[in-house]
Length: 242
Image 1 (cartoon, one colour):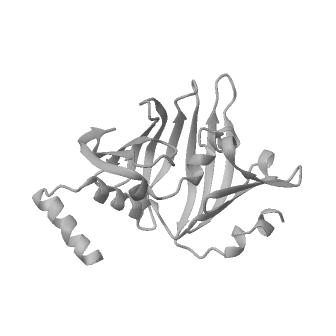
Image 2 (cartoon, rainbow, N blue to C red; image 1 turned 45 degrees about the horizontal axis):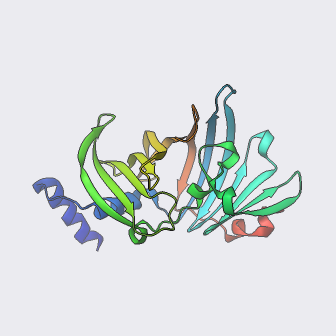
Image 3 (spheres, rainbow, N blue to C red; image 1 turned 60 degrees about the vertical axis):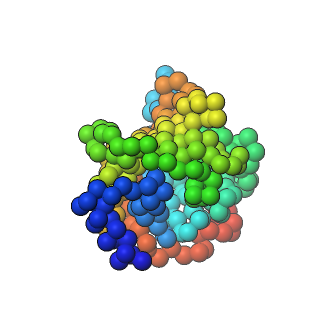
């Protein structure tokens, strides 16, 4: 199958055969999805009339699960555990573990512009969205495919999504997320792309909640290892509450 796909992409490049929107997203998936990873990241949270909040964290990821520890002194007692479509939080100061649900899912993680809904978003775009290639245009000097996703079901966080995908690397450079009314809710932009372990990856990403004024969250990947051994013990309540 990989051999056939390679031949197909060769003809696309050489003879101009057009990719469909779904084929572009599947190429995107190959770059951004992985079986396992260990990431060290920095989160810069910009709020009006406040100093920048800096948070450092380390994440262990395997399949649909993720475990997160904060490395900065102020947040070392807070840990997250994502088990498929559930998000658990451990508050070490209160020695309390709780499941994030309901209206809390719309809140920003640690006060950032990245909501818990964003973090829990399932990789089911092909079942939940109609996908259309709108065309091609330049974005930040890069030749991009412009792909639009429109919801086919009600159980989605964003009704419509518009993506600018770099034609050379298939890394999304910009994504706009809309409500059914057409109101722009959130913008995500990649400002730095690097090749790590044979894959192109956005290492600096800015997320801005358009319902707020003068806020943004910049996520910087400082270290990344993909498809490495990660123990299942990270993804247990026992490890979260240790």
